[in-house]
Length: 243
Image (cartoon, rainbow, N blue to C red):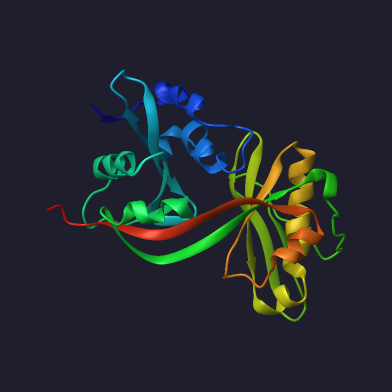
C-alpha cells in the first residue's frame, strides 16, 4: 500500500538513489530535492509497501514567483502523481507546475491547468562551446550572490542572463531581453557570458527554449548547446474539487 508523507530536512538524502545526478533531465528535480534551502522547500515522498521511497514532489519557494510555489514531481506512474498532489496541494491555492511533457495527461484527474508553456531543455556541450566576445556585456552584483550578465545600449535596449537555480553539476540560465535586443543577438551574448562563467566553475549550463523568446534552436546550437530530448511543461495548476 502506498504511503505519502512530508519528510524532514535530515531525511532528504533518501531521495538521492532515485535520481541520476549526471542527467540533465533529472537536474531540476535533483536540485529541488537535495540542494534547495530546506526552509524554502517541502518534500512529499511516496513509499512502496516495503517502506522504500519510489517518487516525490518538491514544493519550492523560488524567485520565479513570490506567490506561487514551484511544484516539481519526480514520478513514474499516474497514481504516484495523484497521491502526491492530493497530499501537497490545497483547493484554491495555485502552484507553478513543472513536469515532463509526456506526463501531461496524468494531471487530468487532479488539476486544472492554465498559462501553459512547453520548453525544450538544452544542454551546453563544453567540447563544442564557441563563446561570443561582446565588450558591451557587464557583470552585475546580485544580492543573492549569483552571477548575472547584462547589456544596456544607448538606445535603451536591454538583455540579461541570470540563474534560475544552481546545482553541483548543472545550472539553469534564464534570459530577459526586449525584442530589439533579441533581434540584434544581444540575448545570445549574455547567455554566452553566463555559460563561460559556469564552465569556469565546472558547471554545465541548461536553457529552456520556449515560444516567449526570439532565440531559435539554431542560434544556441551555433554556440554549443544541444538538445537533451527532454520537453517539459510549465503551467499554473489548481487542484480540482474532490468528488
